[in-house]
Length: 517
Image (cartoon, rainbow, N blue to C red; front, top):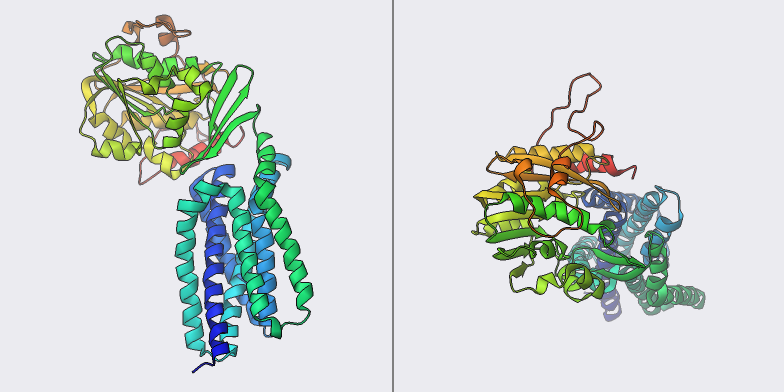
């Protein structure tokens, strides 16, 4: 039976282990989110950061066996370091991205991840050893500290996903969690003060770290914003981090641009070139316009083009992120571009995953327009698979047509033709298009239909700024450096394969294609 003092100390150790575990898992997933946002390929970055963090914990646990004395003060200084390094991690990451040579930001992130993981790995063995030293049996101290650790991990993950990231963003979250780590250290310092020498010195050091973290919590996001501004050509006029992505709008004179997770979605100067080719050829091919489905297109610009048709029946627009829809309906620059299209009575907006919508919907459509972000991670890759396009085909009326944005045949030639091949394997007829969009470069689209597509008969009947009937046919002609005839090193022509859920070849193709741009 433990004495009251020993019981209080052991309870404090269990609480401390739970809280630092919550902080540890938050830092772990935060580093993954930072890598995904800044470096791209979310699955790769989460895999690397989790692996490095766990490896660091293993190294830290191994090193902890050398800590046999001064357990409490060692734990306190580990928390000091975790608070300082983890707290400033996001802030410094944005700074590295803005000012350092390419690739150094990735190295910095991986080093930070390993370091915080190693410090976290030292903590638990020390706490177990301390609990054992005050009279708790080894089995009991190990079980309780590990229980607090694992339970804390679950709580930390839930807090990050549902509270910290959407409410605080990545910079404030890091400083806030660093403050919690520091708070644990200072509480332990106070409650074990009789065992610690030079307590005033330690308290002063902790107080200095507290001042730095509080300064970062209050002003770090504003300073990181100035770092991030350097990543964009034009001044940022709106920035928010929704549940799904980081949304940024820039503006320079008449040029308004929308970025999602750093990827350019459109420029107001030339978006009409993109959206006219996305919308009007497929509308010209479809026999009826009663039911139209847009997957993506939350900015409302594709919907604006569709509303030019007098015989348009109804548009269903499916976009995952309600924050993008809200911006399209409220931001004056976007409203000026989309003519408040999403407020039209002919449009129903549904916030849902496009794959899930197609799987559950029973509606058939005359026209399907797929205007989704590029396939740079697993969650987006599934929207460029044979399974996804098969679902879309199954919602297409026999005399209907579908148009898909399919990235650039110049910058990402293999990606474009893989998407084209994937759509073709669903049994539909296809036609390939591309157009020069100055802000994007040369951009590609794939039209698909159950019926053969004859571009020479397509007739645009609504006003346009760029696209003409003659240009529709011209848009099907590809140069030698962008067509689907690629000769391999062995002299044989490349055979295109379909992208599937089981074999997601598009992700690696995309990463390889865009790494030089």
